[in-house]
Image: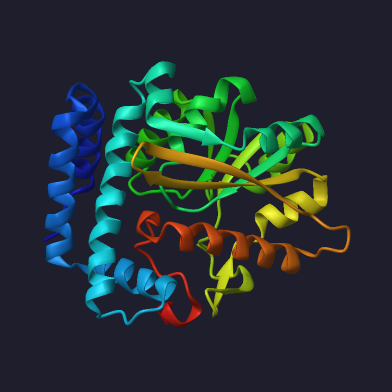
Length: 293
């Protein structure tokens, strides 16, 4: 059964209007139930998530442990979507109740250098909430998003993120190349935020990731080496108190190349994900041996 693009766009727009109006104590269990239903259907996305998480924790993809972890992962992923739909209606006190930010001294030190800051993170937890919470003090931030189809759906996502204080560039098809705009923002001393453990082009930098060959976007390393911008890692996950974002400094050596720095970032991402595997929302292939031919 093929769902029409118009229906998809309409459903997302309804969710952005309705979910903020539903009390969290009601919305949270409903969304968790929907996640469990998706997990039980065990479609291709759930199967891919299970395989990815199995590789992270070192168990067989078909094992009971992998299956349980996939269920936890789907609940975390559904929670992210619930919060994404609700977040546009949150004021700063509400944001502060839902997100705990740690290590901001590393972000402050990077900004103090005046050469721009590249915040790198993974598809984990909820990075939207800390971005919204910190955007006023950062003077906004610029990010890159995968261009979704249809265009109306992408535009809806962009509008939602812009309300949070983010400038959103499409990874392809923008008025100007995203890499050029990002470099300009860094040269202006501003902050860019990149979710960068997944390579959409299949032409990324070869890395070793959890002991297996993968490719990752070289953009963060390329921009840091070209502009002198600092890199700060953002470890995003959930705990009993809510969403957490923990900042970590990243060393950039004068001897670094795009390849060595991208591998260092891959190692950082692996540490983030290994610490909180259920919060890694990766329902797509990530390793070279998983790529479709």
